[in-house]
Length: 111
Length: 117
Image (cartoon, rainbow over all chains, first blue to last red; front, side, top):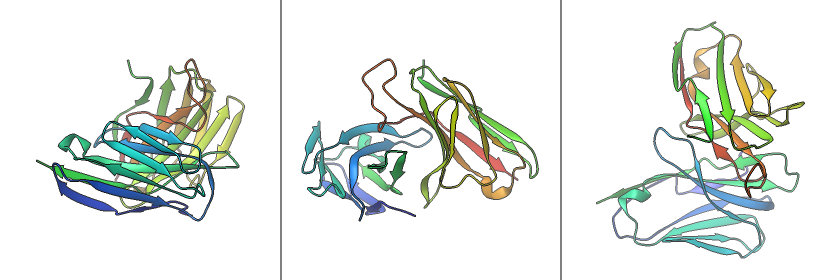
């Protein structure tokens, strides 16, 4: 069962553009993480959000957790080629046994 | 040095062969996980272990087995490999460890690309 739906699945933009990717679920999560994966490597944790409505910033990346803790978004301002990669969201349900991963958004930023 | 290491990084094998993938970590985490990643299917949990004496099946455990030899070591075995087990395999860890981490933040190894012919 895929609890987390990510959209869009693919995104190709030019350097300097802004973009938003979404992570949605019908389940409530006690926390949600965003990871970035580059080709040939494992996912790397970017951020964890815990509180409904929470906003965290990591340089040009802004992460928001929905008020009801069922969804999240990642906004990138002035995208750069180095932002290229697969962005994965992962949620921890209140049962807390393991993370549920979305299928990811594949981002390509061209110069 | 990498905190989570996986060996081998690449492996090509034949149908019916027994394969073992190994994972070691230096983060001091007590929880370890094995995932497989397939195009279009994302990361799927195979097995997870919350400590040396605790092993649990994940979403897709059929055809796989694991062994937690020590807190730092978690191996995944394919007793009789089949072509649809061709995938990228990732080991991950979580826990307070020696730093300020938490159980819901996972740290991944570099992956093993397994091809079963």
